[in-house]
Length: 274
Length: 321
Ligand SMILES: Nc1ncnc2c1ncn2[C@@H]1O[C@H](COP(=O)(O)OP(=O)(O)OP(=O)(O)O)[C@@H](O)[C@H]1O
Ligand SMILES: [Mg+2]
Image 1: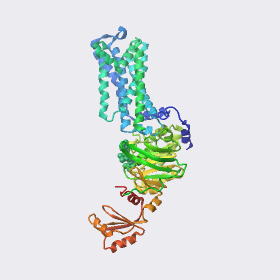
Image 2: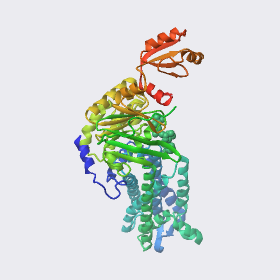
Image 3: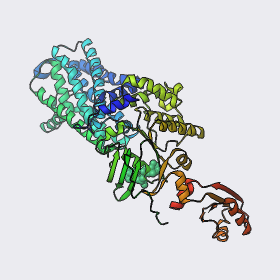
Image 4: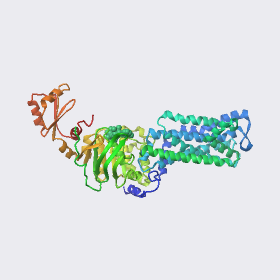
């Protein structure tokens, strides 16, 4: 009895972001973990399989016809090794997309976020907790994919290990941005708008062939989009040919993540704590 | 129907209320959902909001919980302003929303556990607490089930149990017994009564007058966002109704004609579509007079006045339509 009240009294008088942040991100993560344990594992396994299947069919099927291509810094590499980092970046994005669909459900149908915000949690706890879970899943997929790639002999440089944190950063940024966007959506059908952006991004972000095949104007557009930054960054790591453009990619994702979290937190506050 | 100036709303002088509202107002655009209400709830009191659909009961509850920003007036919950210190206010509150919003993706027990975690409560505290709450809600044997395997009434009980996980000092109950069978309602009332004995302050909205009579020490009757009257159930009945009510039915076609003949009988009458209510100190005597006027009702019933009659008098409308 007294313990609960004690916990209440432990909340300081007033602190910055007091209404936004309840210092309790782990509670949100714990809930998410419990839900995952109850969920169908098929979905989780399919998220892992997707890039592996692409790698098998395109990398080895198509790769047999294409042979060796020029990677970053003009290094020759097998076609499978060329597309592997791009597939990893894409799966990080798609994982975040899948999670954002779940977030939509929790926002509009199960009202989970409303319940959370009617306790001592703040919108920042909810946003960060959910995004971290998306990120952990991204990490899991990255580890799985990297193991397969290593077994297939596609990992040739120690730099390639950086693909793992790289993929996690990509997942984090996409999850943040998607969560921010999801708060504006009211109906299930509108989720397809996000799909309509990710699908072409997957096909055109120098995933299967270099950017140089496009006219200059198209290149500029692609380079403005997030997935290209992810593909280029991971490909540099994979080839062990890292130049200063990686800093631009990193900065791009950090800014994207911050924007996403700010947007998501602000929107959750606006939606539920009017 | 002229508005009756509520006697107590003008100047409640008692101090130290756990919840105090002054001129509390909520507007949605041009529409005023809560129209400048005043009330004060004393610690350990059980306080009710009685009113029809759309009266502004849930809106008031949400403002108390700090999840809906008020448009005007003052609101104080345990010395805190819910608009500014929402999380701190909610740490003291247990909330049973009008609609169950359980976490369907996780198990019954986990619902309680996770909810406690949202309040930052520790596992060591939660483990015994959850067993106690499962017992309270009679859901011990459902602890391992998923929430979607529960019946509507079980879900309601789980929602109520969940609201108690942080040992709240104030419990907000928005139509707590909606969806419960009569037996479960009585059990719940009994449980709530026990909480009250332990010092928990209860704020209850309802449109069931029996619930209001059972649960509330004091209540306000609200309609269109305004307070129509305030007092204990018995005070309200005394002030706004007679001791007894005679209900007579003549069949829907004959009702209006009979009403003509009955003019002036009793202290007051309400002509409803299917029956006529005659308010009188002595219902049997009123019935004798009805018969003396040459009318033979198809059915007649003498009963004590209830809050339903108070509401009918104050608003000219039935509470449950
Ligand atoms: N978000 C909103 N926007 C506009 N109007 C609203 C909104 N929420 C509630 N209202 C209006 O405010 C009024 C009061 O609603 P409220 O839910 O508080 O009523 P209530 O007394 O709880 O009714 P019920 O018994 O049906 O639960 C209603 O007329 C409702 O239409
Ligand atoms: Mg309501």
